[in-house]
Length: 430
Image (tube, rainbow, N blue to C red; front, side, top):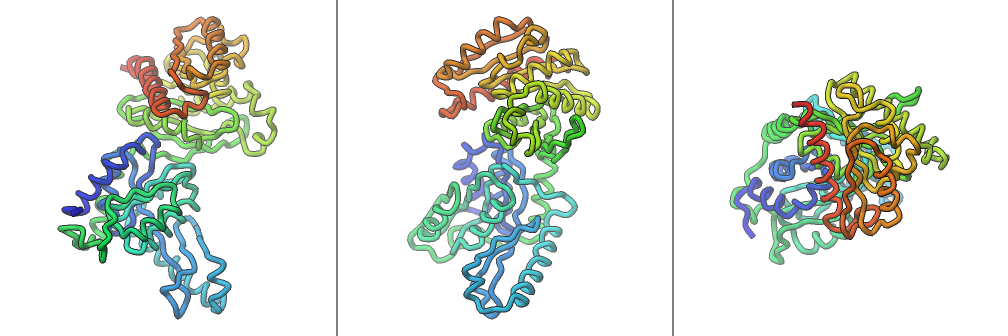
């Protein structure tokens, strides 16, 4: 396989990575040569782009022997075995780490400027380089990304030798390598144009990516509710001009991959999203709180109140499992009026029965989505539908179980939710 240049390689990689777009990934390019490839991948997947800056730590006097790697945010990935056998003083090792830390910060600042690093907590991450030889740097980047909180790490490269690819495959969640030629000597021989990538090109590509879709980059926020600060991620509204707040179910959090996948679909449709934790870690330790729909609903009301203060936009709520009961109870409490209430509710595999008698007070248009094989929850939703006095609909995803893990099931949920929110939030705002 011969790539014309790094842009062509990125396009071909993007075609292979397209199924991952539904998981709301962050694309990270290894500077410098990996960034032009990553730019094309991010553009095609509609994903945010950032660099991942890592520095390998070499044992003094034997720099080819790495004892670890460092990344931004104070992340250290250290091999204690190599340290124990290096016979080098702690002071010398600390000197190496200090020098590499200074260089790491210099490079990050040079590439990114004043823009903050995209947070990776709970995210699906695609790390892209223009190729691998030994794979040592790419592996260090993957380890650093996981230490920074990435939930899933995919390494994507156009070309690499079979032995390096096989080694890496067992150390990442997924490896996508388009070509593994047996007769491999260097990455550059598989490109027609493999000129050096200057720092200025990296800076320009990152700036273009940031300007292209600033609304898709989540911002870390704190939601104040009853004197408690709850962490969350807010993706501002795009052209649709509406926001959707997510209420997760028991045992889940703002990092829920299923809710994130739905949120990503809504973001692509121009809707903003807020994913936040309804309880603190200490509160979650008491299982009674997880099923205290009253507390969960109060937290949702607080979140929607904050959004209404900051943004004059229509609001909807997407609830999953017990979060759906909290969403319905919150909707009953604040009403459905534009500008003050909740304009629409979507429930995924929800427990609306836990909302209790307030179901009859809900005025927000409500969509109930249940898996066809989730028989107990399906019956509970049928009963709840009969109690609702607002515009409502029950959609059954054929063949799906409670978590919608079957192929295509979550995609159908996302599309149903997008249509419901678009019809009841976006159209009203016009």
